[in-house]
Length: 394
Image (cartoon, rainbow, N blue to C red; front, side, top):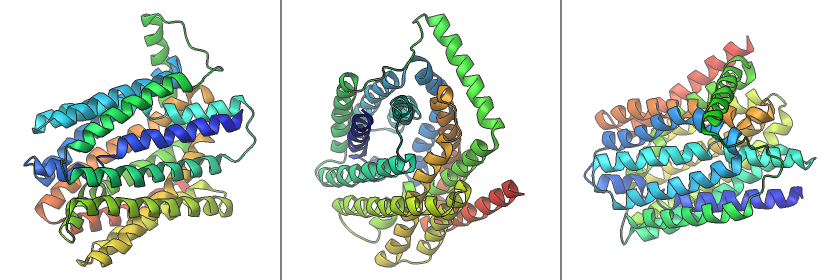
C-alpha cells in the first residue's frame, strides 16, 4: 500500500508542477511586455508573497482540520482561476488581483500536500527512508519544471499570454483527478459546523505557531528559509531580462529553465550524500546556502553569456541541495496533528522573506543593475547564514 501512496504522490507532484510551470520561462517577459518596469514586476510578485504570508497559517489549519486532500483539491481550483485571470489581464492592478487569487491557492497547497504523504506513509507503517522520498519528490518536480517551461517558452513565441491559459486548464484537470484518486482513510475529519470548524482551526493555528517559535530546531530551519527567500528573489525575478540581454529569442528562456532544472536535480542527488555524511541537518543547510550565495556572487562578476551561465547553474545546484535536507529535517521535528500548519509556518516566513527581498532587490536592480542585485543577494546569504549558524551553535 505504501508503494501505491508513493506512486500517487509522485504523480500529483509531477502533474501539479507541470500545470504550474507553463508560464515560468516567460513570466517576467510577459509582465515587461505589458509596459511595466522591473520594480513594478517586483511589486506584483511582492503582493503574492505578502498575501501568502498572511494566508499560510489559516490555510494550514484548514488542511489540518478539514483534510489535506480537500485542501489540495481546493488549491488546484483556486490556482486555475488565478491563471485564467492572468490570461485576461493587461494592467498592473489586474495582475495584482491575479496574484492575490494565486496566493490563496498556493497557501491551500502549502503544507497540505506534503503532510498528506508523510501521514499516509506513517499510517501504512512505511519503513523506508524519508530523505529518499523527499529527494525523489524534488527530482520528479524538476522533471516537470523542465518540460513545462520548455513548452511554455515555445508557446510564448506565438503569444506570451498563451502559457497562462494552458496552466489554467491544466490545473483544473489536476484538481478534478485528485478529487477522485487521492485517499485519506485515516484522517478524522471534524463535524462540519462553521463555528466549530473556525474554533478548531484557530486552536490548531495558535498551537502550531507557538510550537514553531518555541522549538529551537524548527525555528532555526525557519530562519534559514527566510534568509534564503530574501536573497533568491533577485535571481528568481531577473534571470529572464538578465539573460535576454545576452541571448535572443523567447524559446531560449525555456532551454535555460531546463538547464536550471537539471542543475537542481544534481543538487538533489548531492543532498542525499550530504545527509548520509552529516547527521546534523543544519550543516547540510549551511553548505547549500554557501553554494547558492557563492554562485550568485561569481555570476554577477561577468557579462559574457556562458561565463554568467556556469556560476548561475552552480547557484541552482545549491538550491537543489537545500530542499530535500530542509524537508527531512523539518518533518522529523513536527507532530502529525500539527504537520500542515507548522509546515505553513515555515512557508509563511519564506514568503515574508521573499516579499522583503523583492522590495529591496527590486529597487537595487532598477536603480543600479541586475548583476549588482545578485552580488548583494549572495553576500547577504553567506553572511546571514554564517551568523545564524554560529549563534545557534553557541
